[in-house]
Length: 168
Image (tube, rainbow, N blue to C red; front, side, top):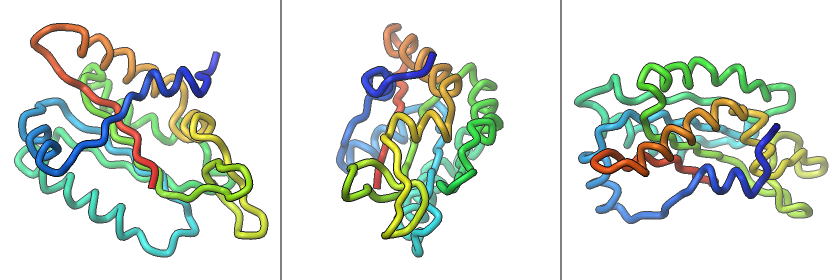
């Protein structure tokens, strides 16, 4: 059984917050963070990704063991969720009690509106976000994190844990 687009949206709630709220959250939130960067291989400049990675490294510099950053390239034949297993095993070490940031750096296909995975301007290969996440991160990895985060957020005195999705 795989996640539908509606299920995926229910599993991965997201919030858009300003700088000051984010600063306060990062310093008060004691949960570890797994940051997954999915990058389209044809982008020439990783400028935005590098800024976010540096910001995260700066915020977790006092306890680097609470941050794991992993990068995976979006391209034909590279959609193996097993490649993400070591990173989610790291989360398992914390009983999946942590925050998850998924940053997708690509653009949308003008004809379909889906996210471009590979190809060029004449022949782009694209997929909807739910397929992209299932094919590159995997159903079981997403389910493990989302179930634990949901349980933490329902209990009093703990959390909040967030799963975040940024598409750039």
